[in-house]
Length: 353
Image 1 (cartoon, helix red, strand yellow):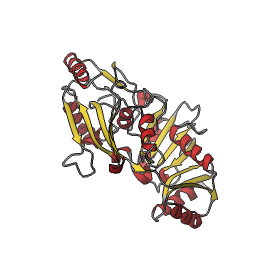
Image 2: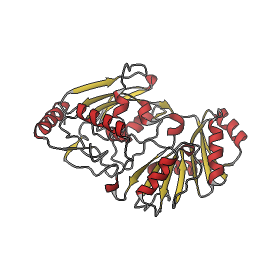
Image 3: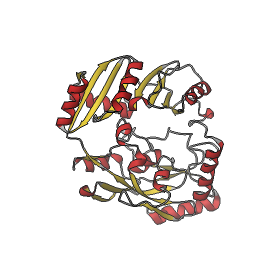
Image 4: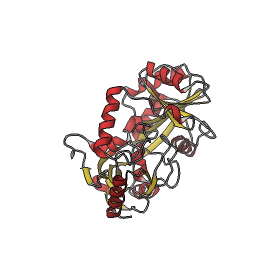
């Protein structure tokens, strides 16, 4: 489908107030509230538009497979530094940015929205709007490209995306430590204040794993400083890949997965169930819990965080934590401005949007 065909389809849907379910490879169809509406498939609008490795920027159409984009970058020893999870071979770059999810490197390199430089959007009026560009200092005023990252397609159809990329690290090692949850949280936060090339961390069942990325000299010096047990390279790569894609044993066959976002120094959470800790303590996954959504969200809010029903469970309680009144009104006004007929992925973020 061409841009002109997308525009005609959207104009017709707006005129008839026909909801549209924007979808690429459907690898994240389960994320957020249940999608509704007529399918608007983006996969035919694919291809890398521009890529100059010396500029560290790649631009692609929304239906471009994420795997194709990553393969092109890898050939030049470059990468998407926020390590987006694909959750399936059919994932597209459009869906990746619309979902706004980031992997193990996020706490140390930045989130998906930090790397989005520019976007092209078709809004509910059928207008083709361009935001940002292909350089870091190209944004004046409100950064709409970052707003669209993680918007779950509720504001319009992302057709083109420009993303900043980074060189792959020359050296990468993983160290293992035996320590309690409290020790791990304290240790990770103390390390965050030091000039260490940490690029990922995870704690589960008394084992803390820390990935170091950078020059060979930097990783070696940090290894000598931190100690721990050096993990086999192949085993380490598999661990971080499995963690990123939720193929790790912790996630496997779990019907309900909660994602908890809290200040990194937050002490061990008083929650029933089993937890896995990432991002230096800032992201905690919860499974096998008997606590209700209300109980979980109340406890997480009490420590200054929020809880997301990431996968499975009863979505009638809301997938994302309820926004404060004033902030929700901003969301409503944005939705009305971009999508006055309310046709794009209605209810995907919140039932009322």
